[in-house]
Image (cartoon, rainbow, N blue to C red; front, side, top):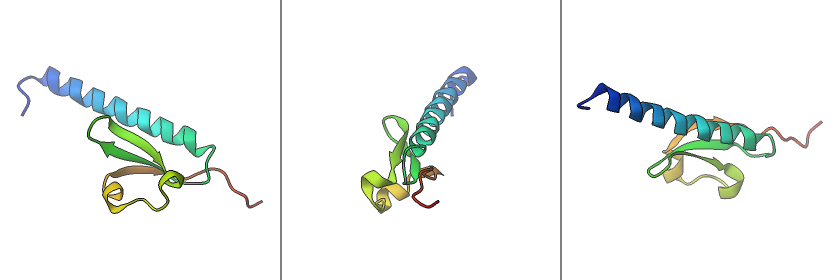
Amino acid sequence: MYASLNIAQGLFQADQAAFVAALDKAHARSLHSYFTQYVLTDGEAGYIAVDEGDYGALPKAMLDRVIDTVPGKLSDEF
């Protein structure tokens, strides 16, 4: 438990900012990709965005860390 509510609030805001930044990156990348973009938890950065096309099928270790997905917006079908 946190000794100070100010400390707890500061950590929450930093965590939320990292999540929003990763989600924004995933949305921006999805506009130029055929593949799903994933937002994953990360021990160092808090959250990261990865492209399914970079990894093929995501390994189980990465799938367990998925928080959100953004589908790719490019399509060859008209």
